[in-house]
Image (cartoon, rainbow, N blue to C red; front, side):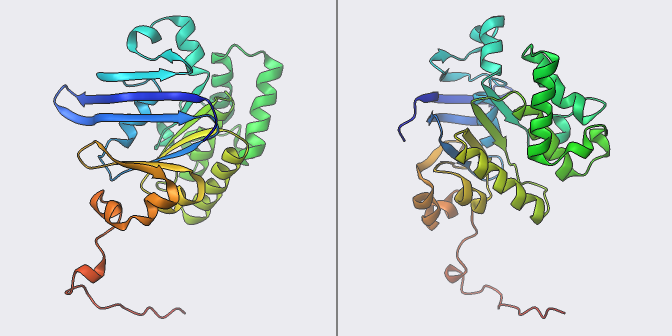
Length: 266
């Protein structure tokens, strides 16, 4: 990977309530134009790591650097540093309802532009561009609370895309989506990657990782890195995936597994 290093974490650690481990000794490096998958079972620390990378959760141990500058509570307390960082890193939450808080979808999309201090013309251009890309033009005047989960997901992505961040972080982007919407979202992520956006995708959807990402960082259930490497090599390591609780143990290892059942379609 030849791009510049955008985010770099060294021995990151975090405990909730100072007792419950969420991350332990996690190091990673993200280069410009790269699509990185954070793989791990539920509770392994993927979401916490994304929030650390987004500057929403402080790393209690280790160091995080973004675009050559340290990221810490002290650094982000500076208004200029905070604004610069927030404009370059965007996080799409797993639950889109947590990201949509305005009366209409359009207001949610405009909010990010206002945070950047954009004028009305540029804001209108960005909102229209994002709405067209995401197919939500007819939803702009609707309340996010009255949308389906798939529509909310599109609106939440739009609220981040309008800010045109260099790094896009996605937390379980296909969770709770029907197959058609999940397929559409996979295609969108591929398009963003092909357009040169830098992506970090936290997921246990191995098909999504295979379709979109270049490299994987696997977090074990002990909240520590279990492996890192090119996506094809990681996904081919069945022992690793089993140990990380990303796939079920092979049926061949369990002689007492139930017989297969043939389903007749009508």
